[in-house]
Image (spheres, rainbow, N blue to C red):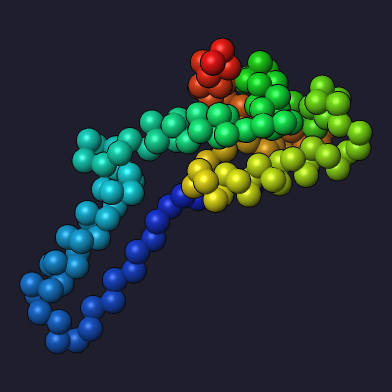
Amino acid sequence: MPKSNEVNIHLHIHEGASPEAVRAAIEAIGEKNEAVGDREDGTGADRGERDAELIRRAYLDSEEKAKPLLEYLADNAGREIPYPEISEHLGFPTSRSLPGLLGAFSRRADHRYGGVQPYERRDTAAGWCLYMSEENAELIKELRGR
């Protein structure tokens, strides 16, 4: 399940606060939003490019079974791939192996990449699947040759 990267800021203004202090607090919040990259109007970092860079890092940091997983998803971009198909391709011995790898990858994504992952988990009528967009697949295919 994807996590939100949304930042929520609550401002509590106490009775007696000067108008100047209130304005300064509101301006500081605006500067914080721009620094985080929540704006795409040129004043803050472009979220799409930031996410693309995080996906590149996720691929380059991957080892063992995670890198082949990302490459397989990139080769099959734009379609929902059932867990059993992925497990078979990666040579996993049990049905628990892939969920274990996905859990480890999610923890790494949460701690290193702000929760950004190059694929989506989807619960379909046929069972759980992974899906990678064409855009994310292109990022991985560009790096594969290095």
